[in-house]
Image (tube, rainbow, N blue to C red; front, side, top):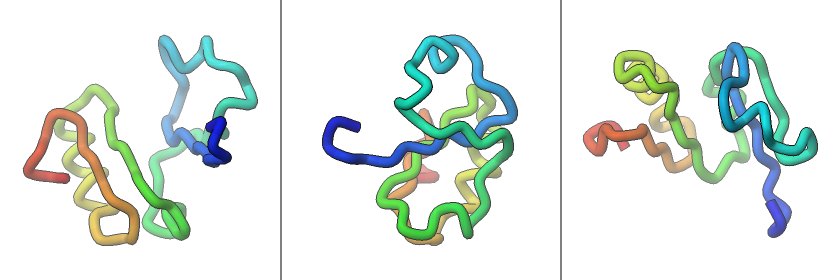
Length: 77
């Protein structure tokens, strides 16, 4: 973020460590991302803590433009 990155976190609710971060560190969007949300995005990390949800979201956004990294699922990256 010091390099000028604009970070958006897509999640129904923020949990754990995210709640403790500075409010200006990222923009929270209270839903899952859509392909349109990724326009102009360089990289997208998918890490919900639920492997099935990660796979579903990763598959939905794969090929939308940014590099996609799905936590703990190298076959989906």
